[in-house]
Image 1: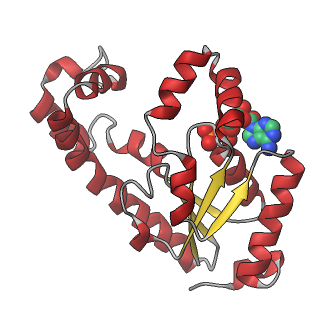
Image 2: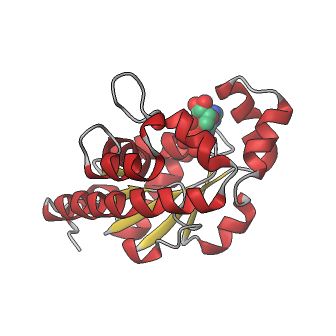
Length: 205
Ligand code: ADP
């Protein structure tokens, strides 16, 4: 069984992912892998330099993500090129880790912030959305990242609204209550999927 876990900025995806890991799931983290594949010497690193030049490198010849971010921020064509370079490597590594987890008979969770926007439904069996109302998302984001209301809203509005994402989800975890309430929903989800939280490790679909 492969769960695709998604959410919006500060909706609590990392929190839920940690709770699932605690219950024995293997977490395949798309953001972590995306940072890994562009490291010095890896294939995406070379291709990025070929396309974007040496100016995206720092003194240690690592790609300066901030610099690259600035370049693609205002240039959709460059963003498309960068995604075209990075995404295939990320997907390949995710598939690899997914297979390893499945071979161990574990519940595999693909943690993919842009699962819905990138249309990656084929990679997972069930889509789980970590949802909070916008008002809660705003307060948590301002607190976590020390942002003004304006800055936080700009980040929230640059993403697909969580209410829109709901339409694509098989399960929704409402994370606007206490963390204990979220834990209970996760247990409920696992119970629904596997007929008991302890049973899921045995399912190796
Ligand atoms: P994401 O990974 O979706 O960006 P996080 O898991 O980092 O979001 O959660 C955003 C912030 O909200 C963090 O500071 C986290 O500690 C806090 N948080 C998450 N879930 C809850 C909750 N149920 N109750 C209170 N605070 C929470």
